[in-house]
Length: 161
Image 1: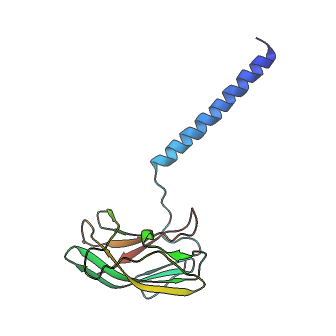
Image 2: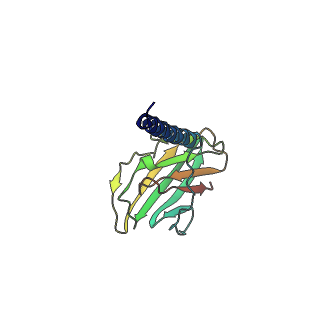
Image 3: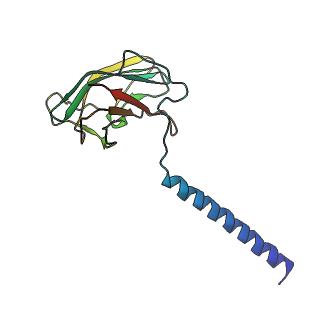
């Protein structure tokens, strides 16, 4: 076997090792779900609670009610951030058993709302949002993921009914 053939086999072997290492790292990262911190850098306080401020994008929860398995609330947004919209798909309710629930619109007062574009300090809402979680036992948490880029941001708003 010539020296050129040995170098070629060594290069192919080294490339295969790199590809396998990347594949193993990718597989391991899929086994552990990404958990972003609730308070991201640049987040600030807000008030009155319950609310969340994610880099100048504020969500307030008012008129919170828990009745007959239905959790209803009113949401108001103020956007002074790089985000450009409010979207009901960005909201999920997490119950005390860590089950995640999307909004429902089959109860009185649970009116669907559409993604709405706004920014530059504008306010949107209040809009109604309702959920039927597996349990209404506390704590209930509103999980909010405003669209501010791939690796940013999420907030958890603890709801005290």
